[in-house]
Length: 524
Image (cartoon, rainbow, N blue to C red; front, side, top):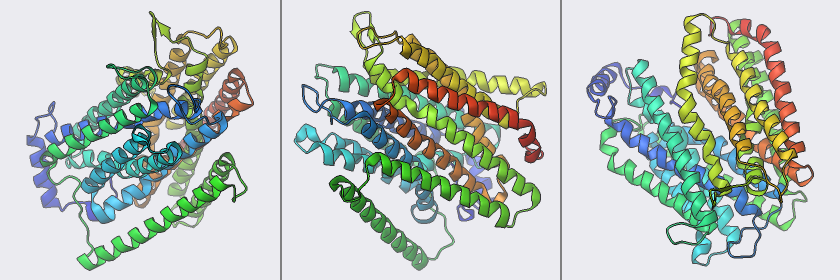
């Protein structure tokens, strides 16, 4: 997410000089050499994130005894932890962006975030050297959440800083950067999954070794980042109108607030573990989801009716709220990939391919592989339709995205109805499901991100980008809670229920689109 802090905008003369420099620097496939630095930093960060994410639920539900012990959690608890973890990964990108804009600059925020992420992965691998399982697990997750909140939004912002001239070259740069994300998302589940579940290079299968490999991946990203730092020029350096005393005061207030927040989280965690709160982890996740929904509704109500916006801006904010709801529903289904779909791959899918047992976590690479293949095709399709004045509107694309998601779950519910532990189904069911989910993602995700910048009033672009993160966070949280229903529902029934919910949302989105489109004004 690009910074919207006016203090981070260079002066016109500096911007012109930087633009000239950027235009001359074409050493990375015709793009600034700094893009190579950020490309490989993000590739390895996504390697670590998706490598660990593919293992997370499987490790939690694995038996606590045996040659490769897990934590022995029941499905409901494991998926609630997964939902909370992915929820906070997205939510903390908001304060992570604020810290970069106001205290450290993006350059330092990315470095610190990467160090904290690596520390988190190695902490989760602590049992390799005799450290306790549970405490290192939760501490490691907390560190990864904080580190990702610092790194993820700010490394993307720095990509934009490399192209002060903007234009199509900047869009192409982001496309190359996006490829790095997906290459990392393919390699992470492949390598970390094999090491954790099957073993490799003479090493026995070990969950903590998989977490450790994710940590080494993040270290590789940090090394790439530091070695290539000189290529970044002024991108990501802190620019502020605050005087040094004011900046120090801002830092003190932030560090104090961050410490207080950390103490609250530790206190809640302790009370939850001892039962003093009187609620389960699943109930805590539910209450948190309801609270965020209530805050979001109140926020939109306030800015639409009392935010001082003209009538057209109010209408567009209403459209953003509608898209927020649809996106949250979409992500609540799509993000089943790391929970219920991962468990389906583990328990009900025949993964014996030509005599080799493929780890369940490795199947997590199917979606990013499809993204790499089909993203250019979908981009070309939208352009082709636009040239013929037949490009679907933003609300219609959201409806199509929900239908793609629903189609995948209808397919998987059919496959699950015919699967048993003794007679599992082929991976083809998951491959088709992930293909349909990818089509849905390509209809909704990049379009939604772009629509936030187009529809938001000028003074609320940053806030609306944050709202997009909140929609993803809510979707991840409810995805974990929905996956927890596997304790009471057969997989086929759960997938059937999700399919009907998301298809119903898709139908509503398409039926509402003729009424929503006029509210957008001239936004296409």
